Image 1 (spheres, rainbow, N blue to C red):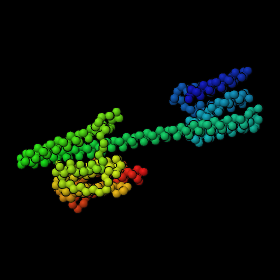
Image 2: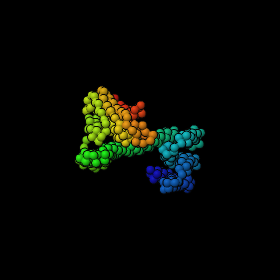
Image 3: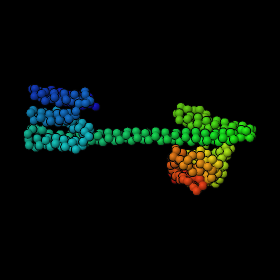
Length: 370
């Protein structure tokens, strides 16, 4: 754009010189204006102030010295447009343009310039100002949109990192907890009942392989080019809570499951959130307590469903934790973020005999996802 302005000013200056019989005075005034435009176009660090000054003052001065030399006045129009497009301080823009218009009007009204078409130049000045203002506003809008787009992209990246962290935390934590339950059982039975100990080890191996496959599937989903069968496997839904509870029961945890309503009538994303929250809550019970009794309740109620995981009794495995307490780790944060991501809410806290996790999530058929 800078080169285009410099070329335009050069052509106007050449036209002004060719129309004069004795262009010496014209040349002495036109050359600095053309030169400063080319300096501004050639060097990014060159200030725009001299361009605005010479581009407005010199053409008017030239018409005063060389009466009726209006060709170079087109430089004023270009300079005004440039000023309106580039200058961030709109007060300066308004003041400079109004001052230029006032000078042109005074010169015309006082007769200082004979046959000077000052009304036409005032109109041109106004049109240049308006066009520059439109371009300036458009540039601001584009810049704001780009900034907003960058912020959205950054926020999307942050949300994606959080989602990955939740998935990895839940999968790895669940896998290790179930495997450790089986291994603990095997250790206790290895002398009393070797066959049962072997069975516990086989279940630990099966649980580890299943969790490894799910971790691979999750990682596969993160790769855009992935088309593996592991990545194509469906995500768990709310009905998979039966197999989830059974897995913990097989590992030795005392869990009771109670459900009501149609567990399949829940949106996939909402169902996955509830499943992961129940999974993490059960994992926390095994992580922080020993010998606890757990009750898992899932109720589908029209436009929403509720999941509750309540444990009682048991012995805390770490100082400062109640039975089933969550400590200050990532688990509770992960569950809250999952619930919030699908428009739900979560309440967690100690009970007289243990710990309670209660979550309410839309089914995805109305309300939050409508």
